[in-house]
Image 1: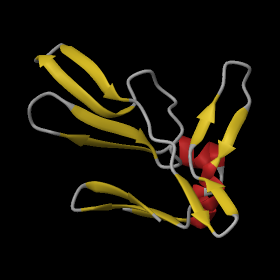
Image 2 (image 1 turned 180 degrees about the vertical axis):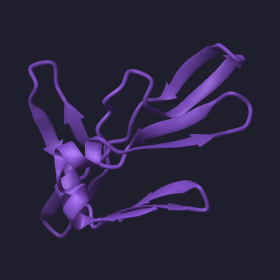
Image 3 (image 1 turned 90 degrees about the vertical axis):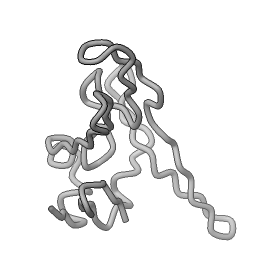
Image 4 (image 1 turned 135 degrees about the vertical axis):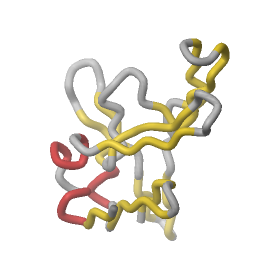
Length: 106
């Protein structure tokens, strides 16, 4: 599966497509192509404490910042309680793909 810049840069389209990686022990990582957490169970590390039902969120998200010289690109994507989106890191995505079952953003 691979999506390019056109889909990744479109917030609605990128947020409507989800990925899931299971660890085989009841834990998982799950999110959207654009990086926006649209469900309460989205997370980069969800650990199974008492499978199959008991789970804890270990890592909700990362907020990467790319610094090149004096320029700073905020690559994260968050929606706040008032509905505002900041930062809008998905506009910098060139592609999203699943490689051997693992998500990769470029």
